[in-house]
Length: 569
Image (cartoon, rainbow, N blue to C red; front, top):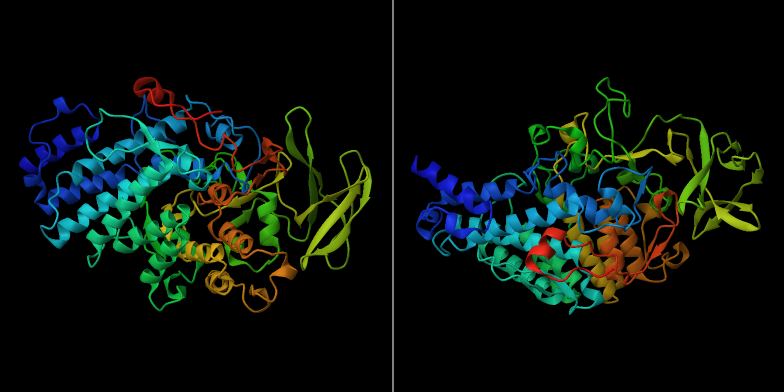
């Protein structure tokens, strides 16, 4: 009973910052000397990454840290295409029109600092140096605090490369919430870095407490390599990964089966840390991580009415084009699923700007003329006008064009499948089919070895070490089945369109890590643009790396109460 009372008291602490209302014995170094108590409360902190908690007086089935993080992080980029306007608040994320009163951004900010508060309570209570088990649990709390800080920076601040003195977010390292101000981006990154260094030191030599849902020394070091990369500390990034891998090239760290990696992520050897889910964590599957990317029906047919998931977010055309260079790429073959495909039939399409919405809407011909090789040779637009299709070899890859109104237009060409509002319905399964099931559930991966290897590859690229960067890229491409003629080498980079090794690495990151929350920041922190001139329910525009719309608006509730400055627009 005493342990139960302790836990109930500590949960009261986690609920907020009104310290004078907490039980006097709710948390202390003495109670934390028992690793059982420390582990139970730390497990509760892990759970907050996935839990759907009451916020603003209501419980919303789509409100969770992990769902909002992945969507907010990914939907600003050029990997996704939304088929039509959606009533989900994520719509404003996609079109760069978020406001301070959105439910998803408000919940995310709130739960992020709630997790941070819980970590601070534990960090302040667990005695350091007591024993290896307690130190490991303490390290896990430093790890979670560092991760949350890094995520907040990613979503609510400009990239480090845009200016380390720009406004970051609020640093909280204790349960005292009385002082609230926005530190600089550099100060916030330093806090995340310090936390992960501390976490790694505390967990080194220890043992992960369970499956991949628990942090470890390797997870902390892997996340630290990400921080160093974002801080442009390239030598530190390389040294961190070298220390992790030793003499290995990293190939032994990868799951040989890309599909298994995502369907069984909580047990995959490649995963350094994920958010372990069970079906009961999502009472409404349409509010789950995978619901916007995938749909299935209870009678076994994907996408049928009444099925789980909305299935409204698809692969963008530029991403399809990139994967299309190598049809044997396992990352696309195992993760992409066309909805209602029609084998043997071909479709072509190209975007035209709708003058009313300024969105790119696809013109589609579902019955183009094709040659004996299955390549399109002629097509028609919606008015019945005919066009000759010209094949070109661009950077060794085939591309197809029509000429309309004196302008050459690149067309999309693929096996015919269902069209949702004129957009090819290509489902993405990284967040679906958990444990091989027919569902829209999975255990979202927060960091894995492939990213760590690519972090080093990018650091090498920034240092001009092309040969070393290509060695890391080869490890990733080999697992994807891109060997032999598909290998990237210094001798074939230029003919394949790469004058800069950094662009090659960024394309590899795009394919390997697509939909995992990296793409917009990968572009902006490298001072590149997000080009969204393709079909989808978003403005036809190019977003520059210094666009003031990049950071999300800080929630109105935070700004109005604490008075911290809002992000400019």
